[in-house]
Image (cartoon, rainbow, N blue to C red; front, side):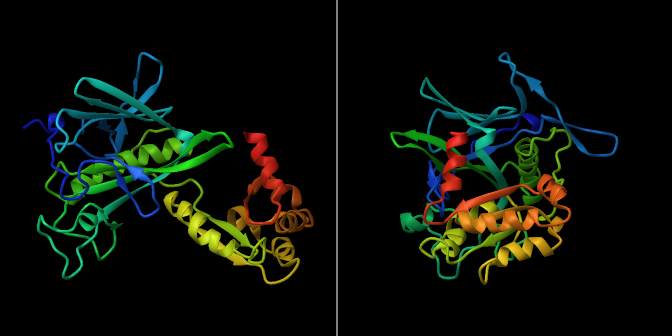
Amino acid sequence: MDLAAYKPKVDLSETMGGREIEDDFGGKGIAVVVADRSATTVDQDGQQLLQQQTTAGGAMVYLTETFYISSKKNTVFEVRLTDKGLCLKKQSNGSTKEQTIPLKDIIGCRCLRSKRRSRGSSACTCASISSSNRLKVVEESSEEQDESDVSAYLYIYAYILKRNRRGGFRERTTITLRFRSFDRYEDNNREAQKWRAAIKHLVAGEPVQRLTYQPRDARKMLIILNPKSGSGKAREMFQQRVAPIFAEAEIPYDLHITKKSNWAREFVRQRDVYLWRGIVVVGGDGIFFEVLNGLFEREDWQTAIDELPMGIIPCGSGNGLAKTISFLYE
């Protein structure tokens, strides 16, 4: 059998109903199935290389697949990963809809596996809709993984800019690709990892060549949080709204909570700040300027300013700096 041409129709109704699904954070994604291994070659070291193609419009295409959802008759998804972003082209009953998620809106992707059913849960077709339609996934190394499901799931996380009368906001969107073409999880996971590596390289602005990915900078991010900023909800906001984004982007971090006035200033002035890849301040304008002044008080302040990018998560009362930055990039 020619495996490169093997694209089976797979019934997704048992897990996701073959339709848009909602995840834990309220975003939506598309449940699809993939099987195509013709887009790669192998070099003399045994490493997979990506065969790039160019479209008539000049876009560089890295990966392309046709996806089927058997619960929706005559519905086909063509998914392409290009240097512009992730292109989703839906063809159903003669009509075509196309959407491209720009690379700048994609923050990361992760390979996951379905979670083992808890004891006492029903596996029959008459199980409640709420439980049967929600896919539960865990990390690849988790002991809770469902050995009976050989599928590998690639979750692609994006925050798409939407416009309204008040300006704009970013809507969290999750695209779910399900790999279930092989009889073994290891083979399905290899295909998912191929897409993950290509996306991670593109998001990081790196050339896509070998289909493995290791971050160039493995250092953690330094998070300095003022728990008393604004209404005193900075810690809660970070845990609920910011920490999940770091997890989606697979960026590790060290969280330090300020203990008194000028604590952050002394911290960045005295510590070896080069242990971290950047600094994110969670609070208002005051805590940000504490960190900035602490950096300028260092003997190596010029190197520190050049090498350490800084960001702010606005949790203060006025947030004047964050509003200015937002207006500048608007």
